[in-house]
Image 1: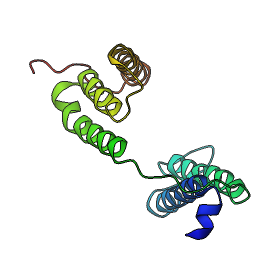
Image 2: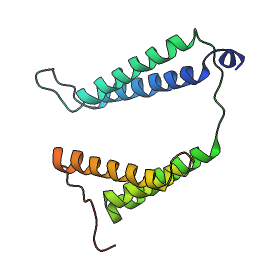
Image 3: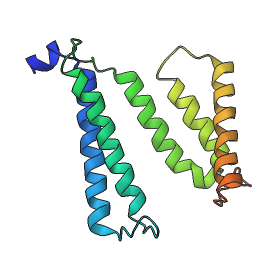
Length: 152
């Protein structure tokens, strides 16, 4: 632990987590889904490529951190709690209320973890994220998501 306190522990930990998650995803996709060829891609091609790309980015983040000084980040319970709660609430409400109200709840709860953004900024942020989600998933990709589920 003393080594991480002298080096840039934040980037080392983040890079190692990215390497682990990316490698696991790539190996899992390779072993459980048909990869196919570049001309005829199978369902495992994208998760495999994304996993290896994530692992490479993790190496690019962790390697220079061994040569920098920094220290370990300190744990902050308030942001951790509110972001975790926001993700859980989003998962529980997206099908019952629709994606727009669920994103407003997600954004509102996430902002409670930090006091830098006011009410107006939170509403603008939630509106932009909701509009972007509807445009990307419903209009752009044609995924049948419901912006609002009526009646509540």
